[in-house]
Length: 358
Image (cartoon, rainbow, N blue to C red; front, side, top):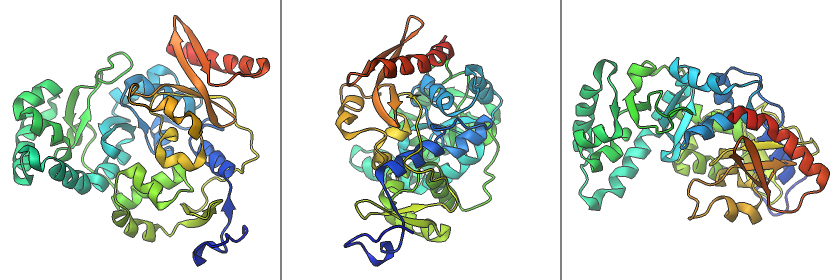
């Protein structure tokens, strides 16, 4: 066990203290960014707790960066075969997940999302709960027997204001080829129960979601779990208690939770060059403790003039610059001057990424 943490609560006095670098390597290992995951795509998505997919090519690059031997067509084929699915889930953002995780995540966050929407739209004259249920019945009828509708058609059917929140009352998925590398606008929707079948979740959905997060991003604080899931700390308390997580301490004395047996490779493990897409979950605030995105660079990745963020590359486990695919090549923009041999290493690592785009 690690050293005691001065001034920390009793529960932290006899637990192992993890350095920021320890936490960095733990996240990289679990995300397939130390050693690529040798898994089929659905299992890899389960391992990393899904991949954000607001911009279709980003989910392809995010999966490629984390997996061994993934071809671009593998993602499209998996979507077409319904082995994986795109949908609006955590924090109201589009994620690429396995069918099992789709249902677990959707069920875990459903009531909180509905409560939030009703509260946020109360002054705008939006329908209340009964009205949304009625609109949901209308939409389900229109999508029955495997039918699909475009976003504009749902807006026309329900009205834009109602349509904006209807995904919190009707379980919808984005139906390929919409939202693929080849057709990037993800605007065709179908009923989840028609596309991937009815819910088949063996455990409590919220416990499932929290366990997925800790296995993919832990050790993490309770606030980090709340930030990632979009749920309140009070809502998470029963699931965290039921999971009986391992407990660690950060260098600042914060309590960190983890699933038993999850990888902790240690801060001295070497980290290879890696390339991340826009809005990669490893860079969001729930993972701030790992400093995969150093704070001095955060304003250069997430800012109001670039709402989609920018693709980045990692050196020694931390963002060191951005990249772009231009005319068949990966163009690198380091944030600070790099030694010649390091720049050569990054360029060599970028060659497979250029081939993936081509």
